[in-house]
Image 1: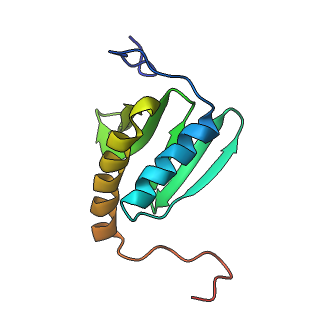
Image 2: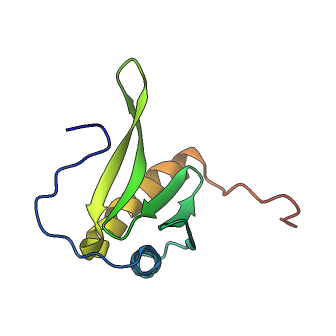
Length: 114
């Protein structure tokens, strides 16, 4: 199995990436986490916090765990099937809480009056 493959232990539902991203966004909102959805090129991104972007191809959600492995320092990613957005949202919320301790305030955009 290559680095880009992952085992699927159950059949996952394939939906459009933007629909999956919006579903995750809704579950994050239920956890009082604000996010933005962006789509294009067959993927959708859910921007959650500084250093936390979840992307989906309509089959799985994936995001960087904040860890690297090996001498090559390859990033380690977390995965969750799109048909379990509730679990994905809880796991993303946990990662968001870690990052909020590291970066307590979001970085303002250029021209942002804050």
